[in-house]
Length: 247
Image 1 (cartoon, rainbow, N blue to C red):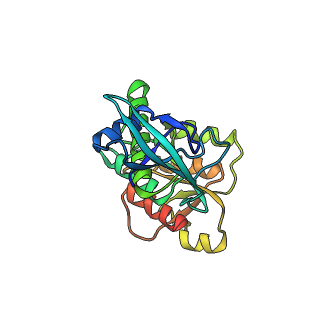
Image 2: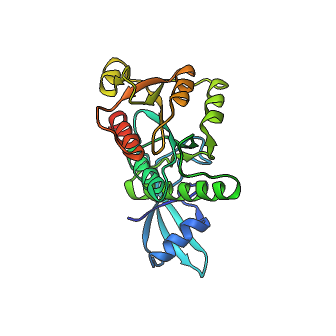
Image 3: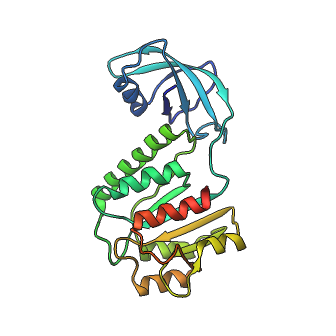
């Protein structure tokens, strides 16, 4: 059945007007009353209750869709480890691709960053629109892959501002910096020594992080790790690291 993210409380037996995004998606697919769909909301409004619900379309209006919420299924397809990705935003459409694939792998959150060598520079309304777009990309990827928890796409920050926030908060698990430094330990060896339940990865943009930026990250407790001798694109490196941790 088609799956739709529905940011509303879900309860078996309820009649529900689908939120705008889900309703438009149903209409685009030309579904009709009587068709069956699957709804999930990541536990929103359910005191942490996740899973997904069967539902039946009961009415199709010009711009609204009503459904009958049916049985709840306590199925979860989430990763057993929470991994947060902080990445220097790649330019063009590569960030869209990164968000989509990271969501499919099961990333918990993505922090878009601007570093010294970043090609893509965003601020103000343009940054807000991009974040909203990336969040919609993550929702669509979650609907497709069967995930029930949509990763959070955080507002765009500079790397320095983000690192300052790390010192002001308590971060559980491990902090790792993808780096080509000679003293970087191989990621697979790090995982063999330590298998954290929560981890944060920092990956640079095109051209990587500068030495000063890497030093700043190391000062805040990030440990350098390597994916091998080849120089990978920033989006490729981020996904390889995620796959190593999540799969």
